[in-house]
Length: 460
Image 1 (cartoon, helix red, strand yellow):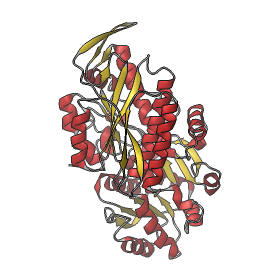
Image 2 (cartoon, rainbow, N blue to C red; image 1 turned 120 degrees about the vertical axis):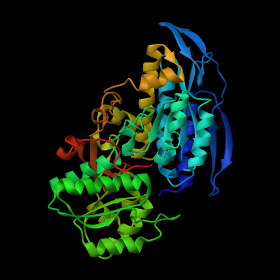
Image 3 (cartoon, rainbow, N blue to C red; image 1 turned 45 degrees about the horizontal axis):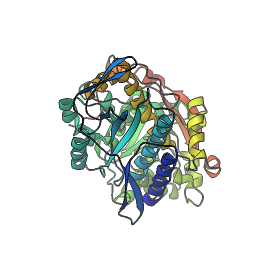
């Protein structure tokens, strides 16, 4: 995993880029991270607004919490893990969102309204997540990012009571479940369905029949593992090892890498579906390939890291050979107009290439579309933003990801498209994100016909 200090440095650079682009006013405070790195944290100034009406060119616009009418500023909350187990990933995602909003604001905002991100570092702690939500519910018009599935489930009742809309930063299958998603806007193919899609792609393109499954506990690992087990039955894989929930995450990696690796080695599968943190995958994969066992490796996208194929990596050659993955957003390698323009802006700013910038911009684009709809409806209150978001269908994400729908049945809302990629050391060495596109906007027939009746794994 890239070090926290590196991502903090990236965010600091990005903050200077945004300031140079003329972003909104903010107060800056310098903090010291646990590893000794320092960064400038942007704290957006907040005000308490009562119910107000402000006149726009098209008539009156209702506003309440999170809208500064006098300065035409809309505040959007971010509940982000910037110091916990997914800090490196979420740091890059937030950097992409900040970059996106800087561009929107520089171009005149949304109908003249600029957008401010109000960020809280939850540290991937459920209690902190709920506490910070209570703060942001009184400061922002909606939650533009809620990191973590149990963390998001923990605020569902609060969201419902407050009438606040949120965009989860997880791909848990429950976000498409109508019993859970009344105040949520899902995006991307869920972990469970992703397993169907990628295992279907692998079988379609390779002579394979046996499968090993390994995952960490919790929603992320168990939702993906449940999908892998379902996919095995639907596709005809023989599951020769089931390590669902068997990986024990430790501070630096798995606590039991040899146990999992030895089980995979003994099973000698054609395909391994593993879901965990990238450091979990790296430790287990290294042990398996070190024993001379070859297989196709896949899993939920956050399982993998481009550092596996970075110069000097002892597993670079094997990882480039073995891994096949799917990605929720549009990979830079697709080259459509939207992703090409965005990736070029990132590179022009001197930032290192990362697919996770795209995820941050994609989340921000969803929020952008919601705010556009709320302003057009004349209701920029929290309730109006919620209603606007839940009214959207076939949402155009500007080429940054497949369109999303938030109306209709669960099956109609389910995202059935992902992009299939493989590691590309040459692309990484040349300054790219380290991925080659195998197939854009892929849907396996099993996924096209999948009858979604609820979450594959219950968090309850």
